[in-house]
Amino acid sequence: MFRAVTTRSWSNWQFAVRYHAYPGPRLSPRDFTPLELRARGYQKSTHGRADVPPLAFAFDIDGVLLRGPNTIPAARRALAMLEGANPTGRKIPYILLTNGGGTSEQARCQKLTDQLGFKIDLHQFVQSHTILKSVVHRYTDSPVLVLGGRNDDVRKVAEGYGFKQAYTTLDVLAWNPAVWPFHDLTPSERESTKTVDFSKTPISAIFVFHDPRNWALDIQIICDVILSRGIIGAPQGTRLSNYGRRPPDLIFCNPDVLWGSDFPRPRLGQGAFRIAFQAVYKTLTGSEYYDVQYGKPTEATYRFVKQVLKDRFKDLYGDAAVRLPNIYMVGDNPESDIAGANAAGWSSVLVHTGVYDPQQGPPAHEPTHQARDVEEAVKWAIERELSKRY
Ligand code: G3P
Ligand code: MG
Image 1 (cartoon, rainbow, N blue to C red):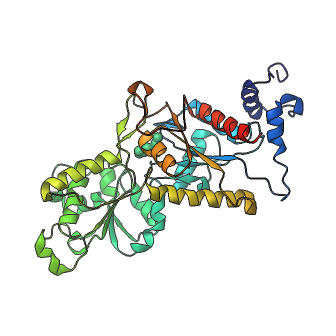
Image 2: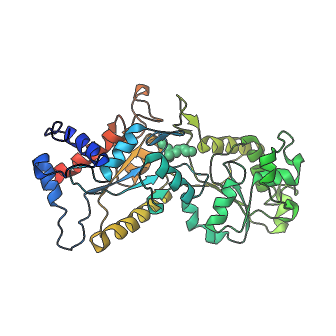
Image 3: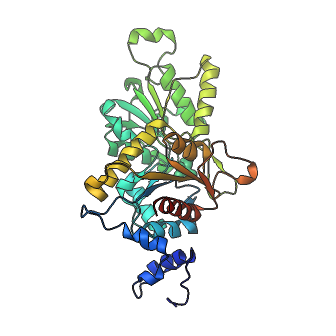
C-alpha cells in the first residue's frame, strides 16, 4: 500500500498524514519533492538546537476545530500535519486562541486533547478569560461578581486565578429571591450558591467570564450593583457620594455578538449580552456605563497572546527563538479572528466552517486568504512560507 500511492504532488502530504497515522517502513528521500527535501534540509542548524520553523499558527476553536460538541474532521488532519506530517517533517508550533471559556484552562485542555486526538498543552491554550490572570492582583481581596457559564463553574475558575471573594448572581438570588422574582433556583443552582449578606458586601468589580445563562437576572443584578455603587439594594443615585465608594469596574471577556456552534445559523454570544445590558442601562440612566473589553479582536488579548507565543518558542527553540516567525491566525469570524490578527500584523485565514458564510458577501475584515476549512488553510500557509524560502 505504501509504495502504490506515492505521487509527486499534494497527495504526498495526504500520504504522509496517513503514513503518520499508520506506522510502517520509514519514508526515504525518494518519497519527497525537491521543495520538501530542501525544506527538510533546514532542520540541521549550527546551534545544535532546531532552527525556528518559518511559521506558527493560532487556531480559533468554535467554527474552525469544533462545531458545538462535534470535532470538524479537517481539524485532526490539520493538526496531524503540524505534528510532523508536512514537507519539513518537523513539528510546526501552534496555539489555540478562543473567545470561549467557562471552565479552567486545565479542564478545557484535557477535553480538547480528547476531542482533537492531539495533546493540547496549557502553554498553547488561551481562552477569553485567561488574560484575567494578569489583572487579578488588583482585586485579590475585594468582593467581585463573576458572571457566565453554569452554576458556579466560573467562580471556581476565578478562585483558581486568585480571586478570594468571587460571588455569582445565583448567590445574590439565594440571598434575596426578591432581587429577581421571575426565576426560582433549580436544585443544582441552589447547591452551587454561597451564603453571603450582600447588604454588607460592597462589590468592587463585575467580571463577565463567559456567556451568561440567565440574561435577565444578570442584567438586573449588574444594574443594581452599579446604581448602588456596589451594595445591592442600597439607595441609588447622587446620595451615594458621601459613602466614598468607587463606581464598580465592569469587565467583559468576549465581544462576539455571534458565534459558530452546531446549529445551522450562528448563535448570539456574550457580545450580544453586553449590548442588551448597555441598552437597558442607558434607558435607566441616559448613558452607557464605562466597561473594559477583553477577547479577540482586542489589542490587549493579542498582546497577551504574543507573550504566550514568545514563551512557547523560547521553550521549544531556546535562544534561536529571538524573533517570532510569521503567525497565521485561522478563524471563522471576521470581526474577532481576522480583525484582531490583521491589527496584530499577523497573516489571517478565514475558513467557511463557522460564522462567516461566503454566500453572504465579502467579509467585514479582509483576510490574507480564505479557505474551505482548517486543513486547506494549513496547507496553503505552509506552502506559502516554504516557497518564500526555497
Ligand atoms: O463563546 C465562544 C464564542 O464566542 C467563540 O468562540 O472559539 O470561535 O473564539 P471561538
Ligand atoms: Mg470561532
